[in-house]
Length: 61
Image (cartoon, rainbow, N blue to C red):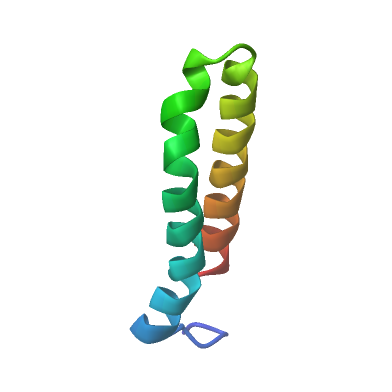
């Protein structure tokens, strides 16, 4: 027996939507930054932040 209620599919979709929007907003930067000076470090920071947000979201579901 699960001691806490499992979120419905609609609630999961609402939780995933902000992460999806943030990922889509970062895509142009992830495509361009590696070709600029010091862009690799900035790209790595963006990817690390997206990974952290994804892990947090997955653990909350």
